[in-house]
Image 1 (cartoon, rainbow, N blue to C red):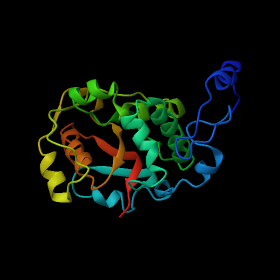
Image 2 (cartoon, one colour):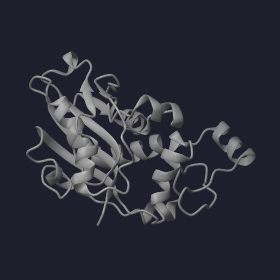
Image 3 (cartoon, rainbow, N blue to C red):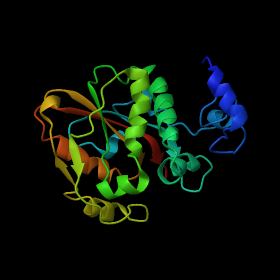
Length: 232
């Protein structure tokens, strides 16, 4: 990838560092250095997007098509820093860079063939105000740079936020997101194939709740992608 003069100049004035190991990035690297990129614990689920352990989380809950995550996520593991930077350190560029990285890998396997639109997982107004952005939308922007697919931000609304899902068991997660979403405007997506985008998926409870809401749109088809998938 060709690096602009301004990128090189900014790297001299304000050097960028790898989100995982902290080493200085070269002008051609984004977010991850070459070594950490090489050791990213990839799921490779884009090779079998119709049937993989992540896809099985959603079977029977809504009309699911393809499912894949970029890498296996484990709290406190070195690569978990990527998600931490995106969600808690005001670094939306991490989401865009990783979204584009995932899209390039997935596109090589035809993952986006026939998909019409990108739908970022919505967050509450309070969360957006606190964070300054929706992290899933940043990921979607990265995907868009590779695929050219339109982003729909106002299809589903997150109604409320009871408490963090992080420390909850599977059944608690399902209860926490029950009736958490409502459909705003899905007319333009009737009969179309949408890609629901999230940052990290653990039990799939939030995606299931959102997917069920989207399923009210006539003849919609839904695929799912995320950056991380929590591995037991």
